[in-house]
Length: 411
Image (cartoon, rainbow, N blue to C red):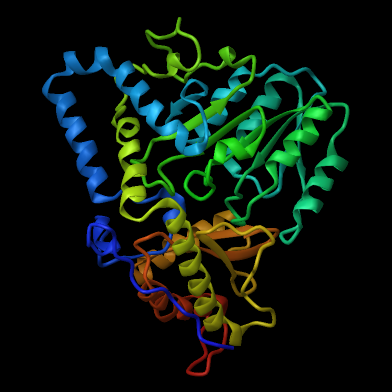
């Protein structure tokens, strides 16, 4: 098998090495952009300047915050293919889901469909909604390698006369694949069922993510792949009952319609929203979003292959897990049997290896199997993945109790 071919370290249009544009700790290897993102230094400076302005004159700042947030919304919404008047800033994807759940009214015996690849916090919100009304939540089981056609068919088979809502991921968090949400939403609409699309990972990875998603409501994080400050996400809807949506904090804009009522939230730090356009523009100006997606895919493919190559001698199955609908920036590599078999174990392994090796990682679990979910962004380089092989694979083998050529390693 030929050796993986990594792209050369990227240089931005400004002449800056991409890695140097992010204020990341050089003593740490960063292979988990997908969980919490990373903010470029230029955007950090922009947000710091906004915060400084607020601190210098709070009485000037807060009464005018709505017009500032609206201006940021007008610049940000087109990035996901949405109209500003259909879009509201929210702190994160889970907040957007909560806003929608709070607006819904169900009856006893009604049903919500989720998937077994859904994000746990969003599913827990759906379960809380169901409990309020005596409804139920049922997970549609989607095989890891199911084709888009099979995914749609499984939803078609799962719908019943009691189904009122589908909650489905545009990009799955534990398995890093895209789902055909528009087809699912169209199928649901034919049966009188509404669809909430969880696009937490979609902005930046999917061009015009909200526009292509379908569904009654869509939301996506801007602090992940677009690299905005943490605490910035969009909720988008054209639903006729969108005036039933309310922000999580009642404030002085409560009498305004959607989305204006979301522009004022008391004294929250809205600089996360205001600096978001700068992060989107930074990547577009310095590298271009289409090129960014291509570069992330190249790096992720090479990174997954070199890590899988390091694990292949120690398992019966190929650890490389090619998915039917991959995303540009994330790949799955299967862990040795017994590691990360639950979400809790996978999360614990993430922190354990960070402490032991200085490598930031993401481990996920699906149907009792643990995976390394690698992430790549513009600042990623071949040396990051080589460091994972050198530092993390021996630790992984030790924790799995696997005999290596050099020694017997036990947990």
